[in-house]
Image (cartoon, rainbow, N blue to C red; front, side, top):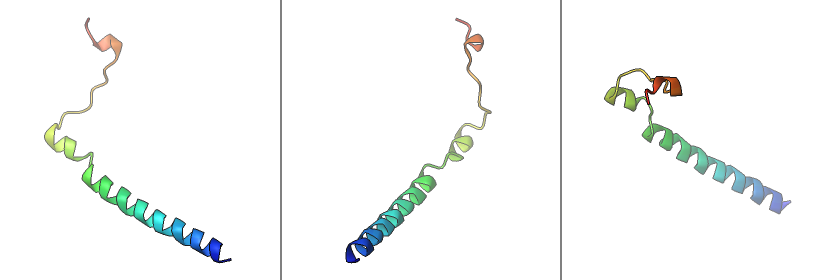
Length: 52
């Protein structure tokens, strides 16, 4: 019984650490910041659009 409790505790702690890591990475890698630098709409680059 003690092994199951230790395993569940480990899973909870690792989940919390992963959640905090993902939370801060999402704040740091904010994709909306790129719109401040380059406000143009996205372009669809298909082969027909490229004049080669």
